[in-house]
Image (cartoon, rainbow, N blue to C red; front, top):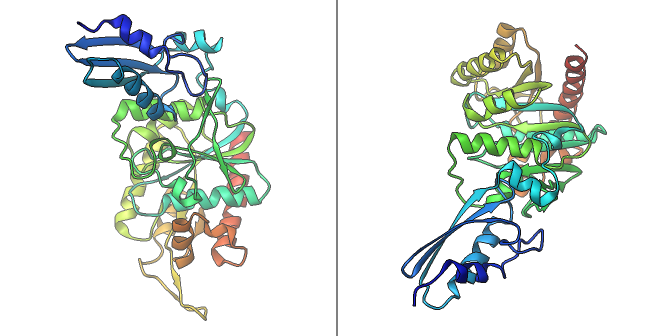
Length: 353
């Protein structure tokens, strides 16, 4: 006996959206059913891109349809609802940038190349601003290398509410990352259009609440993510992270040129891995050279916001999910606290211009 679409729909009526607790069929999330012999393909439209519950929904659909006698193969294809479809479920469609309505300053952290410690600077700057009394969030926009959850020691996954994603919280700051959606070790293979869409979702469809600062950790280089952010929302400014080497500085020039071309202010330069202090004394060693950050800052008439030393505690804190700024006695903590003050002052200046 041939399998019918009606049989499949009846089975799917038992599958409920984990957040809304209603049938996927009743919610209009089942977009298509294709049957070929003993194989069935079901297309499910999620309420939001990067839905944190997508794996559970996919698993439940497979289990329900696979229980129909005669079916040997079930394939589930996930897509995303249109604005009109979401509006039918939630009564209204959240505006594109609804989550940003109460965010005062958005500061992006960028780098011309990978491996310069951009994410380390992002996390510790966010925590330093929080220590200064600001309400802070951090968005991990590095879709292909989302390290922020590891650095903050976050393993939980976010939940949805009313068509919005709720950010996770740790050490008093809010955080959203693809790393918390996909799970640790899961590769994220997204091309340009999907990266652009995800960043816009993370900006506008995450319930950030009232924030003084949203720190955005950008992927390295001058690709889709920086351009999407530049075009999606007014930025208070960008911080460029570099190391003293010549090859890093040449990439910094390209990054600065990108943001200048979009009339986005660059707040200043952070020279990471600037020097190594010999334990027990004041002697320092310039392992990666010296003066590079000063040179690029002078060329573009920008301030050097901080010179972050090489310190084993920075690496240790990032690996253990307890960033170095949480250590009151660390020399690095003072560096980031001073940097936070300068960033706050510069952001306010840009806001008042």
